[in-house]
Image 1 (tube, rainbow, N blue to C red):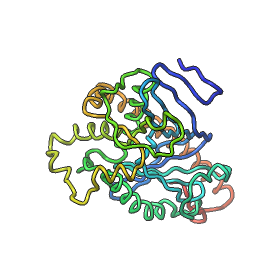
Image 2 (cartoon, rainbow, N blue to C red; image 1 turned 135 degrees about the horizontal axis):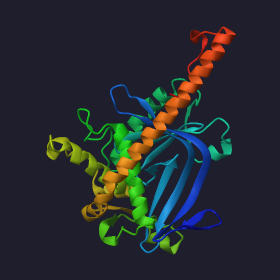
Image 3 (tube, rainbow, N blue to C red; image 1 turned 90 degrees about the vertical axis):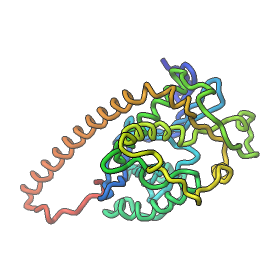
Image 4 (tube, rainbow, N blue to C red; image 1 turned 120 degrees about the vertical axis):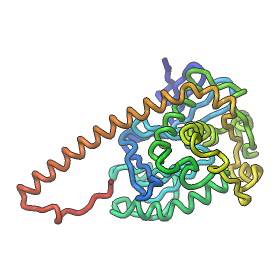
Length: 321
C-alpha cells in the first residue's frame, strides 16, 4: 500500500514514485515496421511521466504511460516534437507517436523545440515518419542501439505490435522489481559512464539512470526465444564495424546509466510470460472497446448524413487513424 506526500510522491516497499507531468487525455500510436507502415493505436487516456527511485541503491528509471500502456523514457531514448501537440519517440525496434488534444494549453507543450508540422494535417503521420525515422535511426546508432525494426522481427514472427506489448509488460516488471517487490539487487545490473561534473546534489554524482537496455534486454529475450528455434542468433545479429565504441556511446549519453546483466534478466524471467499475457489480454479488451465506439460513431454519422442529405463523398478525412 502506497503512502503519498503532497499527492506527488508515493512510497512503496523498496522505492518511491515521483510524478513529473500529467495530462488528463492523450493518444498513443505505434508506427509499425510492417509493409504498409500501419498506424496502430496503443492507448487513449491519461498521460503521465514519473520517475522511480530505489530506496537503497542509487538507481532510477523514468517511465511514460498512456491509459496503462508503459514505455521507458531513458537517456538513450530519442524524442522529438514534430508538431505543436504531437511528439515522436524512438526505442530499439519501435516508433511511437503521442498526440495531445486541441484544447491542451500551449504553455504545457513548450518543453521541447521541434518541427513545424500541423497537428490537423491529414498526412501528419506520413510526413512525421518521413522526417523522424531517418533522424531517429542515426541517433539510436550513435547511442549504441540497433536502429530500425527488431532483428528478431522475421517472417511474421515478433511483429512490432507484439514488441510494443512486450515493451510495456517488461517495463512494468522492472518497475515492480525496483520499488515494490524488491527483486532488483545490485548483482542484477551494471553501471557505466559518469554524470556531468556540474551536478549540484551530492547524490547526483552517484545516481545512475536507466538505459533503454534495462528493458529491451528482456524484450529481446522473449523475441529470441520465439525465433531461435528456427534461425541461429549469428544469422540475426551482425556486428557492424561502423558501430560506435562503448566509450563514444557513453560520451554521447553524458550520464551514468544502468542496465540489467544476465543474472538480472534471469531474476525476472519467471515474471515475463504472465506479464506479457496480461498485457496482451488488456490490449485485446481495449481494441474491442475502441471498435465498438468507432462503430457507434460511424452509425451516428451515417444517420446524420441520411437525414441531412450529405453523402460520404462530401466528408473530409480525419487526422486520427
